[in-house]
Amino acid sequence: MGDLVATDVVISVPVDKRDIGHGALQKNVTLADLTFGDGVLTYPTGGVPLPAKEKFGFLKVIDVGLIEQASASGYVHKFDRTNHTIRIYNAGTELTGGVTTPAAVTLRMLFVGE
Image (cartoon, rainbow, N blue to C red; front, side, top):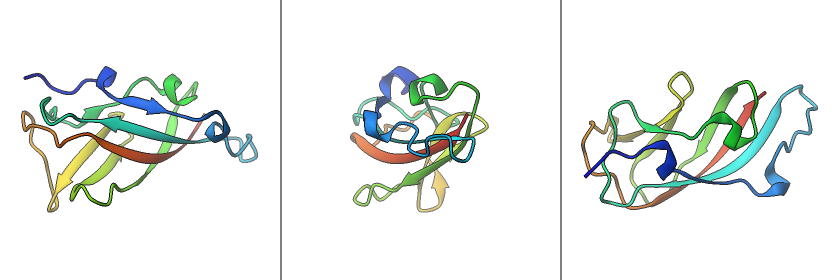
């Protein structure tokens, strides 16, 4: 079994959810659904790597990533802006590298950046 990689993260950004702020704040605001995990691949040390910022519609930087938690998963997901990853926690402790990831989860995320 291998670790999840950025190409295992499926991004869905409907056209009407791209740049929903229309630059009013001099920032791009995008709502996206991210799906990853299959119950076979393992959690990489440091979190699930995300595809390049351009895949989310950003050219310079993602300043903020807010996550609507998947209610039934029992896990807490956090965006790590510095490392451009999603970190997964169970009972307050981050999953360790090499642990099999949960079955597929879809997270709704709000991104703000340039």
